[in-house]
Length: 57
Image (cartoon, rainbow, N blue to C red; front, side, top):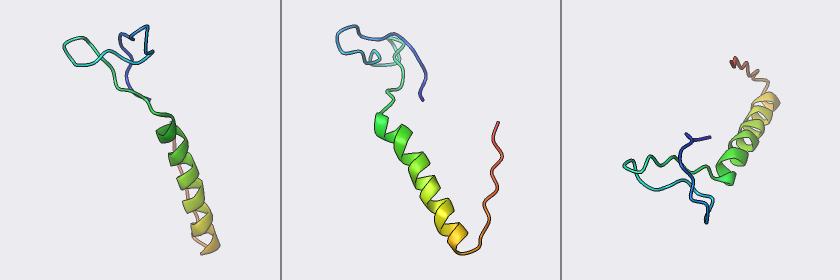
């Protein structure tokens, strides 16, 4: 997810521009697509007998 900042009450989106202290808009597809694609990649690698090790904080 992106940084947070002032939000426009009408559109529920971050204010535009650095001058107004606007933030990055988070899009639903970006939050969903990456885990699905990674799961698919890990499954394909497992089918080829390649193990995936992940270290996360």
